[in-house]
Image 1 (cartoon, rainbow, N blue to C red):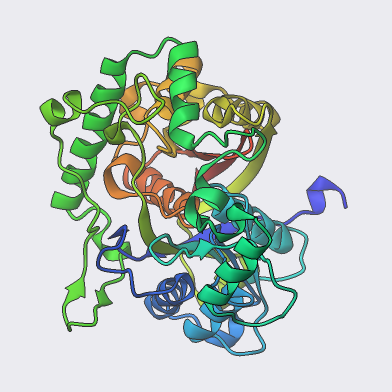
Image 2: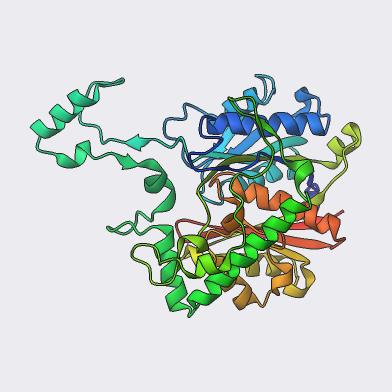
Length: 410
């Protein structure tokens, strides 16, 4: 199909849950339940007849033990009819951005008119994993499995692996499986990013997020969640205060020389949802676009260097659309660690005043499958509020990759 035949696609709505601390207020909610809450609020807030939604694409990384087709369950829990198809996407931290890309493409080529795209993650409910030692299908008694493993003299079979680390936070291409903090530290040392710069950036993220919370800039997009004790979670439980001296006194993480816990994104639970529409859906349903989704770019290189991948991803996106850094009003670069936005800003000469202006994952947490939808929705709100034409959101992801999206205010 010729490019001229492709349709415009718009983001017309954004909702997200508050972020819960790891093993905190949202620990009893599955990822699908959190996704369902975000979807239900999206339908209610923008008064969307549920039969108008042509599909749901949701990112999720830690699907072990979640059950079949998590996105499908989120769609049903969100109030959509059984006739609405759904798919789950996993590209680690870029999962919900890839879900958005596929939803956008379906509308762009004329296959559908209205989609819900987003992401969800319950890091608190990610299970431990045991290697299979029995040929018997179905649930097994742990004591029996232990006996079978020890009789085979296979001690590794009875080691319980943390699925959150194994499937979400470590690089499997190396025998020692370095975690994301170790790879961030590798980048900090190789690219000469001092420890003080990491502390200062973490402080800035927390200060900006605290001000965003204080001024309720995102309040209309956050869905209150009723907890089991009857109370409501209305704000990010994860919000860190800007405590620079405390950050400076932290020791580096294990096997790191510069990266501390303060300079890394927080483990968190949460979900985000975006309403994506064609011109036709906008006219029929009287929707008001937040932004036009212009284009996407993906970049892949050395598996250990996820930290630097956003730079060429952004560069590729700018080149495809004949734009310069100066044309972009705001950038949202996911704070997988402080190293990523620091390196990105340095290489591309992005002023700090145009980068992650409301804080990021260091300050409010990083539910892996949900974050890139959150930063994209946040970016759309930002360029509307400040009347800027363009914005770029990007997430790096494990495996040495990054995905970027270009938004245009309408």
